[in-house]
Length: 82
Image (tube, rainbow, N blue to C red; front, top):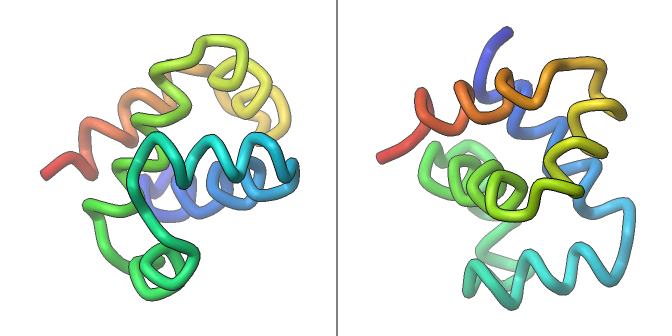
């Protein structure tokens, strides 16, 4: 699967829960504006996947919601990593 598309799907999943979205912003240092502006930026998308990789329950839940294996999210993060 395309790592950009997978990361965007994962971002949508993260943002579907307000406390989780706030945790993403807090831990990554991104602002809502920077996140919006960085939707096409591999560094921003990699940070979203890194956020999931750092918390296994979210990684597993996101992978289930997206219909992919957790390893697919990790592989996408590595392909997007800068």
